[in-house]
Image 1 (cartoon, rainbow, N blue to C red):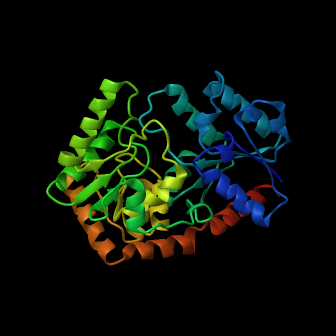
Image 2: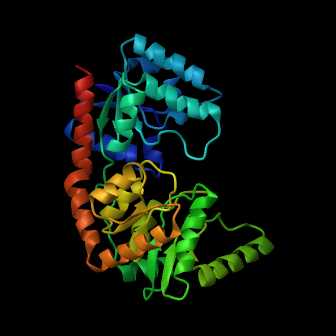
Image 3: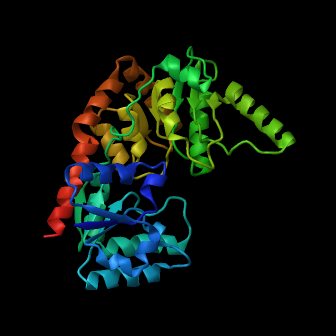
Length: 351
């Protein structure tokens, strides 16, 4: 069976979602042959594949292509009985006003024979929106085959030049909009007279190159730490190196999902793998998973709700609830379990 993943080189990105599933399947099913690279989608080589798996539809908007071009291409593939599947990472891109990109998501979902959902929230929505597709659950897996280092708090703080005497709330991943920065900032400010800090490596842009701007940046950084109790490292314009990820979680006592608009979040499962309690918005599949596992949720438009969820998270962390999260994640969402489930879905479509 030949399967094409509609992504650039998955081995050359810090996002481990696609490559870990590919490797998980290949480990037990070496007969699977993989393809990837967006150029292939627009070349004749694409017609040699049995299944086309689209992860993020906007990635197909390559070299001036439009949503209409994608629609035509998908129809050409379907006429040749090539199977189209998609993973619903987002209902549509967040904070995006580009009509062409939004339309591309609808085009891909409409053409799909099967749509994989990371939780029941989107599955229930899509069963009404896209009834011609087979909507199935494929939970987000934990990157247990990739992250095997779990450093202590002391070692983590030393690595990141932090004081191990403080408590840290990690807000991992990109800050996609100002409202997410405001949410994290309010949490930090609420702990202003304590030893609790928000650790948000991607909160702000990288340090400027010019000396005067660099000086101002460092002053602003210092003031935010003192008065806002938020610590950031300027990774907003590029992703945090994977080798540092375990240290950010190792230094932290609690993980906070800073999103106000969200469907799924791999950061929830990442925090579970790292043995952390997670506080997050009661929205989409994220809210359902957090409630199902007994982690605190909040109304993202209610500050008191957010503060209460964080406090509850600290209380649970004292009870070592993060280890319970780790066990739950490994028992239910290991790479081996989810990759085998994906393989069986592929197999059911290719009969």
